[in-house]
Length: 233
Ligand SMILES: O=C(O)[C@H](CS(=O)(=O)O)OP(=O)(O)O
Ligand SMILES: [Mg+2]
Image (tube, rainbow, N blue to C red; front, side, top):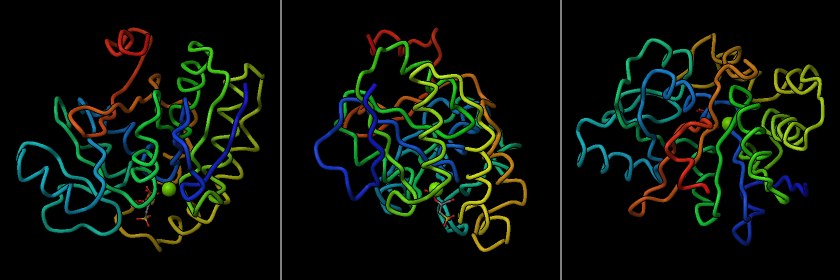
């Protein structure tokens, strides 16, 4: 399997397979949203777009990173989401890095969004699809965020079928700038448990697949038995 690890500014042509990584915190939050019952997550291109979608669909749940803001229901914190009932709801999510990275590869035929919490399910899907070329989008810090790069490198090894000790990869993520700033309380819309939740390897059994639907980028959980199977074949 050929792998590339690119920051968002380095993306040129749409890759055939893109795995967009945001460990802290967008795609850890997305996975928790599905675990709390969300049906789908619409990835918004801007705060204004998120608010416009929410205005058109008042039953949707609007989520942004950073501080809470008028019009938004929740923030980008896995720990704060843990107790939120999202049963059957559509979430519209806008963050600084993760959602931007997914939208940057929206033309790719296969787009997965991932963090450590869905690492093995993501690798399993890449193996099942027999992907020979995969582009990992390292969303944080223009490709230099070590929590995202470590997660991408770990998933790449597992996707290639290599037995891999996750310890060193998780240690790098725990020492990253994002983890440090979250732990020091320097980031808004955060909870003290966020870092630990972002480092829970394989917490969830599903991968997350983003597809374009009616000009929106929509993220859904994927397991081997998901209905989305048919659209991926
Ligand atoms: O929410 C996050 O962790 C970050 C931005 S910040 O922490 O609010 O500055 O956004 P993400 O797109 O999830 O990396
Ligand atoms: Mg991030």
